[in-house]
Image (cartoon, rainbow, N blue to C red):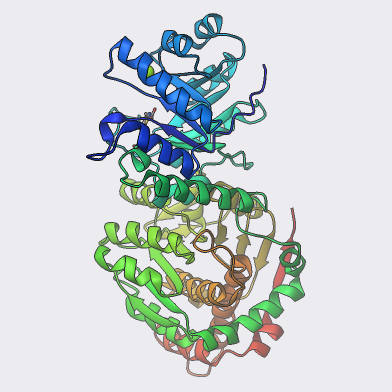
Length: 531
Ligand code: 3NM
Ligand code: MG
């Protein structure tokens, strides 16, 4: 099959019915082209044939001035009559194989796909590209049928089918500048096969300033492209960072970060469960951070402007709207989001909640016990009982590495040995004490510590382009947080007078406050495995 080098990165699908009052179609389109649209599909659901041909010709005349190809939705005849570059076919339109016979050999043909079967068939029939979606719910098109919204997870699955085929892919459905970064980070097959672009209607068409709207999307796409080339997680992993991923490098970084947290006093914003709020706030203070527990949706935009870290813990879900908004705003401000999917395997509600959150924003770190990580990874190896997990994995390094690739973030599997991965390196930490697993919220305060260290790291790392990624090395920050908590737990357990859970928790908070960099260097038990 021939390869078109069509640039699909910002794919505008037209919708004349969505234009704001007083804005003409051609004015809006020209502004969008100036903002960086790279391909246009003319989609006319209500027009008569004569009107459709006229609109297509006007669109092509304008787009050719900007050297931008035009595709026609559904109608082969209109594409031929107007001289368009190709067509875009829905699942109930002209079959692709027949469309090819009717169109000139150079025509670009794209197909809409919602299921794996659609994607396989599109590859087999020789599509040039596919439109995957709807990724999110949208009011631009009726996607209310069951399974019609496929989410980030469904889009990833379809991308896996395309791997190695040369068929390009754009995602469509509910994509906006506010979720674009998350969409791009999230929509990739487990080996990193990613989107070639995103298709939008309303984010550009309804805007009174389509040039600004298009530019915002185009800039985010370019920034992500620059990042995506740097590693499987989409985080900027430089060769200097990689060189630090040794036993010595990690313990030195952890020791230094213990002081950094106290120096920069990161604001650590928690949306967490009712059981652990007080102890999480105390742990943040003991580490040197500044806790705030704030759940209302209306306050999230303001809070995201204050540098630091965000922890989202679904141990009890009272504030789903706040959680959705908090993560979205944190992503826009380049703040690290630490996600603790407490008990995610235990109920269908928790699974749906975690899926919704992960389809809305990009976490920097996901932290869980074996049952939680197993549930996110769709593994049945580990059974859970309520929020506690029973047993572990046969190949824990493989589990964390794969999940990190899937979600393009750092993954921490907590347990007697803690496993951390960025998708390539796996760090194994074996400090700690069994009492940490016997108090309530032992896992939740690990989330708190990670958000505290990630927050401090993002505040002290050298700047990168604003709002497009979390600054600093989240793998090292996560390792440092895990070491700080588990080493303090060892100290607390061996204190005179500590006899069990009741005396252990206050001792732990004391020991966190007294932890020294020297103790971290002396006590840390670290092993590193590189892919
Ligand atoms: N096709 P917006 S969703 C035209 O899933 C179209 O096949 C979809 O509009 C599909 O960017 C969609 O305004 C509408 O959400 C996308
Ligand atoms: Mg159609």
